[in-house]
Image 1 (cartoon, helix red, strand yellow):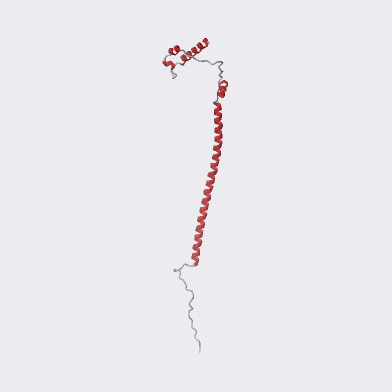
Image 2: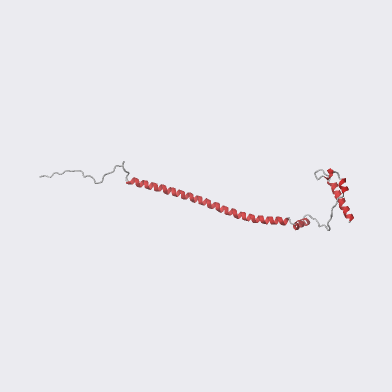
Length: 154
């Protein structure tokens, strides 16, 4: 008796999926790595942008603090200049400038200048004008006459 052997194909217990119905595991892993790389690149780009923005903001803040210190110095200088202006316009400084630089002398007694009405009437209107063309020499003469007349009375 001879035994006959037959070859039967053995069926797999696990059903095979075709590529059309489900993607292989390797493709899913590659997609996951790609998405992760893309997110990482976006995060690095955002962080670099924030670093640039922060450095610009810090530079602006530094310039602002420099300007504030310059303003404070200029305000102090303005206060000093205003004080100097007030002292230059003060009576003591004006007297010192008049006596020293201009050669003015102090009056011994107060002098009242009085112009007689006849002197005013003697000068006609164009000569009393202070506009160009007025005769200042005649007005000076009248004032000198009035001043000497006052001195003769005293």
